[in-house]
Amino acid sequence: MDIATFSALAEPNRFRIVELLLDGPLTVGEIAEQLQLRQPQASKHLRVLLEAGLVEVQAVANRRNYKLRLEPFQALDAWLETYRGVWDERFDALESYLRKLRTKENKESKENKENKENKENKESKENKENKESKENEQTN
Amino acid sequence: MDIATFSALAEPNRFRIVELLLDGPLTVGEIAEQLQLRQPQASKHLRVLLEAGLVEVQAVANRRNYKLRLEPFQALDAWLETYRGVWDERFDALESYLRKLRTKENKESKENKENKENKENKESKENKENKESKENEQTN
DNA sequence: TTTTAATATTCCTTTACAAGAATATTCCCT
DNA sequence: AGGGAATATTCTTGTAAAGGAATATTAAAA
Image (cartoon, rainbow over all chains, first blue to last red; front, top):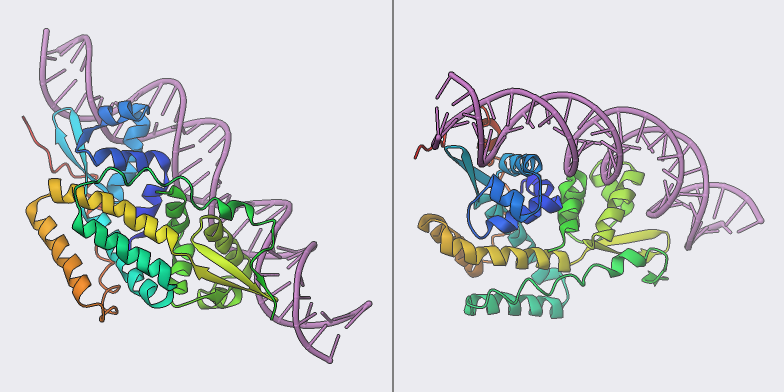
């Protein structure tokens, strides 16, 4: 797994660029406009994405068409794959069951790809606060 | 998709910690030793991983047992899932075919999970150099 | 050939973050 | 109670990275 992929995606605007390019190749100007960025910043972010191998360019006269590259996402997927086996072995049964259920569901119905990105901003908030509380203690 | 996951994994030592925890829960001292880190740096990295929700702690007397959390990896997987559909639609047929082949292969043989992480450090090097060359031009 | 549009690059400033070193905290043990 | 082990926190410092503004580059068009 190439860590540069994570660095590239860790920046909010670059992440948005990647998600934007999901709908197809775009020009620097189009990206800058849609994301309310100044053109130089858009160019700079695209440069980082380019060097990380996440996008590729095609020069058409004045314009530059940026599009997503497949390989880094494949690599990410492959990396996650090595984790799945471990989950099946070590994590508790419910989680594993739910995981398999979701995967299977995705295999069967590839049509409804819309109701999937809107159930996210509610997680990993519990870890922000429990620094001051001392739960999950365990005496032995 | 929570971008904090990417930030957390973008740091080399933290990435190594995560991969290390793949083999099971570990103590701060064990992590520091195995990765040749000083204890404070290990603690600090683990704090970041904790706040990003990638790991959880269980205090046992003096020690702290850190273990991976399932959810961020599931979220990452779900995020990638939204991309797979697009690949099938837009990317060229060969890539798509190879992708499906690999996924299917992983579904069938879950036994050989070892020969998978040693074929990586050869990619995304071609994007480092072609900044000075002006290939992929295209006149219209 | 000058102008104009699209994009890239440079310079500057500010901010975030990682390592190092020292210190604080917490808990067990005697 | 006191000492020592495991871990967390603080402080400092160096460095990378991001945005803003200005400027350079490139190609088409007039």
